[in-house]
Structures are given as structure tokens and as C-alpha cells.
Length: 119
Image (cartoon, rainbow, N blue to C red; front, side, top):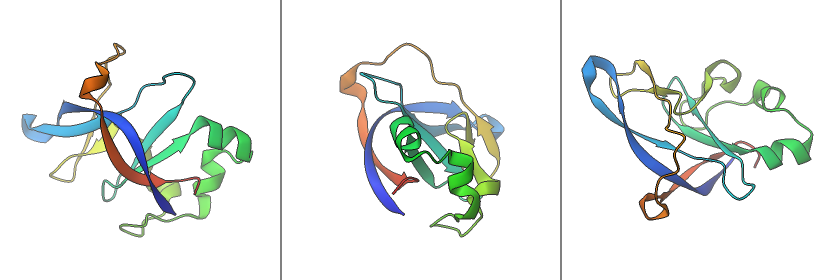
């Protein structure tokens, strides 16, 4: 599995014990459907584009059935969750965040390197 640079937006989410945590999110734009996922065991971030899933003909659950997290070795079929809807907080617990549907300014976006599930 290889890493890929993606454009995303930073945000703050409420984690365990009301501690603010850094999270990142993507929004569909100009026909791009970049989705983020994370390993619930270690918090590693992954991406999968809707185009990759569609054109490969391999649905994400089938793809990850025999994959393990490159950072902690956990079976992704058991630990892969949509991110940032579910994310691993700094204390190891799972927290939840729902991004606002209002598009932030482009100037607030950043690039982040994440694991590409379809590489």
C-alpha cells in the first residue's frame, strides 16, 4: 500500500474528557469523491476515492478483507471506520465528529499524506 497526498480541511472535534482533538475532513468537489477512513486500533488514516472503487469493480469491504493496517498490523476488515465520523482520540477511545456541510474557504485547506487503499 502506498501513501497519497490529499487536500482536506482541518477541524477541532470534542474527544474524551471534553478535550479538543485535531481532525481532518474532505468534501466532494468538482466531481471528486475522496473518502477518508481510519484504523480504530492505531488511528492511521486512509483514503479511497469513489472513482477507484467504481472503476476497479472491487467494493471497499471486499478489498480490505485480507488487508492489514501498515502501521499496527490490525485486520482492516475489523478496524477500518469512516473518518472523521469515527476517530481515535489521543487517549485511545473512539470519538465522533460530523463535518459541517458548508464548504470552508479554499485558503483553509491543507494537504495531508494518508494511505491509499486502492494502491
